[in-house]
Structure formats: C-alpha cells, structure tokens
Length: 141
Image 1 (cartoon, rainbow, N blue to C red):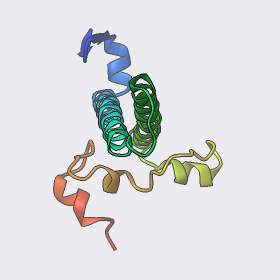
Image 2: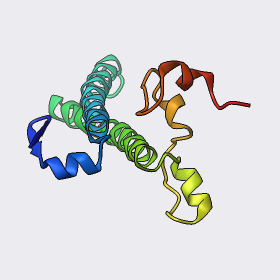
Image 3: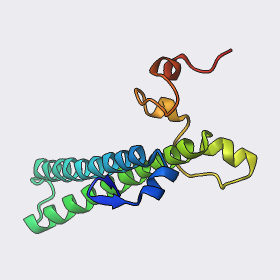
C-alpha cells in the first residue's frame, strides 16, 4: 500500500500510474486555492457592502448571505478551472501528449479547460524522465 495524502492506494494502482502523486498534489492545490478564493471573495463582498451600506441600507443577514453567495460562486469558478487544469495535466502525464493533441488525433473529446501546454502551465515542475534544463529549453529544433 502506498500512502497518498490521507488515503492508501494499492501498489498495483500506484505502479500503473506513476504520476498519481503529482496529480493528487495538483488537486490538493486546486481545492486549497478554491477555499482561499471563497474566503477572499466573501470578505471582499462583505467589505464592499459595508462601504456602500449608506446608499443601499439592508440588514446584516442579507450582507452575510450576499457575501457567502459571492464567495461561493467565485470559489466554484476557480476550483473548476484549476481542477480542469489538473485533469489535463493528468492526461499529459499518462500519455505524453496534451489533451489538445489527443483531440486532434480524434481519441478523446476536446476539454473545456484553459490548458495550453503542460510545462508552461506548471513552471518548475520536472516531468518524469526529463531534466529541469530540458523543461525550459523547449523542443529541439
């Protein structure tokens, strides 16, 4: 059994997917970023309401409700985008091709994410079987 975050993963699964640890780290980062966005979005919306409360008076329960709804929407949008990047990254790690390349080959449907190039989207990340110098040097001409 391999420990992956708080869960244990069978050795056979970990051996079949050597990039599982990187994918799990990406997903964790996406969820933490979503939580941060919720807190920042809710706080900003609440502060903005307090600034304009003299012009648009309303009760504190509505301020909290609107702030929570704003934070939730912003958090959903950020988490969804980051999770899509992680999914695209996972496809890249498993196939050594970007999702766009696979879609052009007709093997999978085109993802809705904003992922363009795995190394550019994750600077500093060393891909399995490559050196850091190769990562930033780009393809050989």
